[in-house]
Image 1 (tube, rainbow over the protein chains, first blue to last red):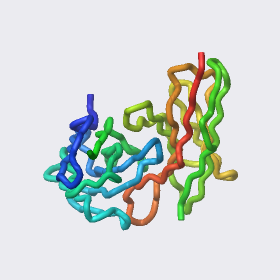
Image 2 (cartoon, each protein chain N blue to C red):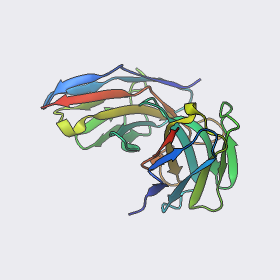
Image 3 (cartoon, rainbow over the protein chains, first blue to last red):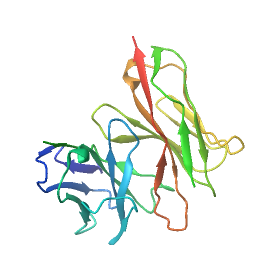
Length: 114
Length: 115
C-alpha cells in the first residue's frame, strides 16, 4: 500500500546532540510537511516543501532544518536539541490530485531529549 | 486570519451512545474541512472531509456536514464503540494565494468511550 513512513518511531538523544529524523513516501506527492506535536496538542507546522521549494514558518526556530534530496525522502535535522524539543514529529504529504488540501500523515517519531 | 474552534474535552461516553463534537471555523474564501483522528502513540488519520458547502463527509459511521451559513462542521456518530476512543482534530485547509494546502487545526477533543 502507498504510504508515508517515518523512521525511527522512537528516538532518544542527548541535550545538544544533533539528531535527524527521516520520512519517506510512496505516494509520489509533491508536497511534504513537518509538524511538531506536544502532549496531544494540535500539530504545529514547522516547514514544508513544494517540490524542491522550501517554505519555513515564521516562528520555526533556526535550530530546525530540513532537507529533501528527492521526491520520496525528507529529513528533519535538529542541530542542538533542547529539553523543550521533546515531542512527536509528524511528516505529511499532499499531492496535486489528492483533493483540496488533503494531507496524509505518517505514524510519527517520538523524540526524547535526555 | 483563519481559525478553528472545537469543543473542549475530554468527552466521556458509554458504548452505543450518540456522539457530537462541535467544530466552528473562521475563514476567508472556500476552504476544505477535515476531521482527523489520532489514536494513542500514532499519527493523524484522515477520518472524513468535505470540500464545499452542504457536502457531507462520512466514514466508519462518522458524519459531518459543511455548513457555510453557521460556519460549522460538527462530527457525529450514532453509536460509539470503545475502539473510537481517541483524539479528534477538526481542520481547514488554508486556501490563501500561496496554495500551500496548510492545515489550520482546532485544539483537539479527547473522546473516551467506556464499556
